[in-house]
Amino acid sequence: MSAGFEPFRIIIVGGGIAGLAAAIGLRSVGRKITVLEQSSQHKEIGAAISLQPNATKILEKWGLGPLLERKGGMPDKGFKMFSTDGTLKASIPFSRETYGADRVLYHRVDLLDALKEAATTEDGPGEPASIVLSSRVIGCDTSNATVTLVDGTSFSGDLIIGADGIHSKLRKLVTGSDTGAVPTGTSAYRIIVPTSQLIANPGISSFIDLKAPWTSMIMGHDRRVIMGPCREGKLFSMVCLVPDEFMNEKSSTDSWTSEGSTEKLLQSFESFPEWLKEIFRAAPSLGLWQLRDIQPLKTWVKDRVILIGDAAHAMLPTQGQGASQSVEDAEALQEFFSDIHSGPSAAEVNARLEMVFKCRYERVTLIQGYSRQQAGPATTENGQKITMNTLEFSDYNCGYEGAKKWLSTSSVGTTV
Ligand SMILES: Cc1cc2nc3c(=O)[nH]c(=O)nc-3n(C[C@H](O)[C@H](O)[C@H](O)COP(=O)(O)OP(=O)(O)OC[C@H]3O[C@@H](n4cnc5c(N)ncnc54)[C@H](O)[C@@H]3O)c2cc1C
Ligand SMILES: *[C@@H]1O[C@H](CO)[C@@H](O)[C@H](O)[C@H]1NC(C)=O
Ligand SMILES: *[C@@H]1O[C@H](CO)[C@@H](O)[C@H](O)[C@H]1NC(C)=O
Image (cartoon, rainbow, N blue to C red; front, side, top):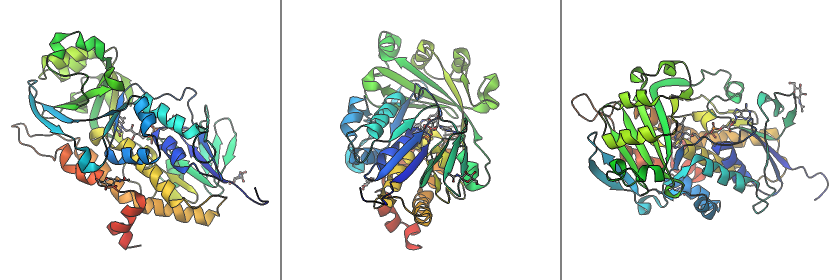
């Protein structure tokens, strides 16, 4: 190493899907990447998550395909729509040909483990990222790119990435104001059950194929259930969306997450099929979230600091795009910093970050808005459809060819 060579020091606040994806995308010679994660366990919650084809493509480009498969990712075959009386109304196969990659179903724990492995393995570009657990960031001085932990330790870098989730500490420091996470009028129960337990019950298994990798949906007028297998079919996962006003759960308006009650869940889905209620009854526990998102921010960048993932654009899960958009953010960082392998100037970093922001903002904000729109009622009381269905938007969601291509072909690019 020649005299005067300084590594490009990157500090990532938060080791969730966004933070780890950024660590993987930015790994390269001459760089030192540190991920500061507040938790001591670094485990995801027990639930399923899907990655959309364009995020899959980015992970495949990074060489993670085999690793993710080994961790139990399941390519999704498409949507099955059931009516509230429990009969199958439509199967809409998902075509890998159309989008060039699969939509993949994961257990969140498995996806996080795979990303962690790819970020920290010796067997990758540049130095492995180091993940420092029990590191809760409470402050950030954007002028000298220094973050401070709750115990007073500080870390300085050339680039700080705020990937600290929907309740981001860095958001206010970057944008100057923060309205925080806003309730959106919908709550979600999350359920995950060992499939073997459900298959043994013919009252369930004769109505739905629990191991086949399809995303099944039952849409009521203002409530819906989205479900499917994960971890190679060993687990069956569901999300049940209910308007807050009909939650029947006392704490739902003032708390973010809690433990739900089976009885209340059954009440909310009274008019849904009996086989679905049998799954509810088999659930070992019920996670309950009041769904929140954030308003689009006016910027994600200040000095050498950028917000990505939920910190920048938390969105509702109605399109399953939150994690995928985080991976797309990470790819944009990779692309716009691809030629920097030693300590850059503050001005250089800021200019690149502004390009990342400019490139990502319009697309993410549209998907964020559409996810909110889709949380509204699906039909009027007399059954007329009043919002677009999931598929009608998927061409936009999935027709993304990476950050630089996007910037050169979209309207944001032509005004630069
Ligand atoms: C009910 C529900 C269902 C969802 N379903 C889907 C789905 O099916 N598909 C999909 O794509 N998305 C889904 N999402 C959204 C998705 O989970 C997120 O968009 C995605 O995980 C990106 O998150 P992130 O990494 O930005 O934030 P997070 O996952 O919240 O990670 C933030 C990380 O930062 C750490 N952290 C926070 N503050 C600090 C601090 N001060 N100092 C240090 N570390 C800190 C946290 O411990 C955490 O590890 C869902 C979300 C919810 C709530
Ligand atoms: C960054 O600036 C703050 C004051 O704004 C100062 O307290 C801190 O020591 C500086 N850190 C470094 C590493 O220069
Ligand atoms: C996203 O999908 C489209 C096709 O739908 C494809 O042309 C494009 O290359 C994909 N993006 C990436 C990053 O691979």
